[in-house]
Length: 82
Length: 242
Image (cartoon, each protein chain N blue to C red):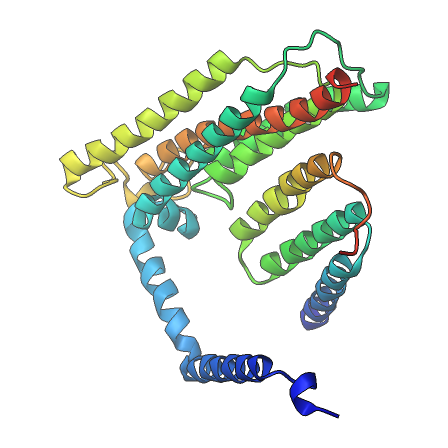
């Protein structure tokens, strides 16, 4: 059972990370990046690193997303092909 | 078809080099046995009995690798100074009042503020008993202020109190390190009594909870200042430049 949860979380993290890279909308990309952090929290907790999980939950999904979103407000929304 | 045009020599050399590097890394990884990693953890777990802190990770962070924590705190201090220097130079004095966000967000943030700060303080104080510690708890407290500023950008933090708390806790941390050097002949020596029988109690582990509380105050005030500068910069740019 726990193996299934681990496998599912790994696949979800990889899918969300791919989505964050491939997305053209930067806000969407940041939200998907937050999903990567959220999946990592579950993985860290399953692999018995609750300290790292707490750090990732607070910094990876909370503070860094807020800082990214504040930065995006001053930049263009769409990714521009150079 | 010209092969040289399709595959330039530079690309072939680069791909050969990178595959050789990859192969050597895989070769090194094949030599690693899993009990190599177990050894380090087992050593620290055995040594953990000396520190009388129930959370082994905390005793590694604040005691065995305590000097690393001093370095991290210094790095964070420098980062905060950089942000404050850069953003306070461009911070305009603008008397316009920024519009508040909706009533729900405003009331909700005020309701949640005390609960989030309480959780942060809990994480800091129980750092030597349960997962978490000064860094995590400090950032939790900063998240509460982030919520407050997002709801109402007119809110102001008292920078005098924050600077006082931040510098006092930093100076006390360095003092604790140096007292350990004089009393126990090692940096960060655990000079407070830490009997092994008290393991798991709130007041146990000697200087470890003291160090984590100091780190928590420092990180909390620094992160709150960073968050305030970021949010204020954002809103001022929107209102004053318009």
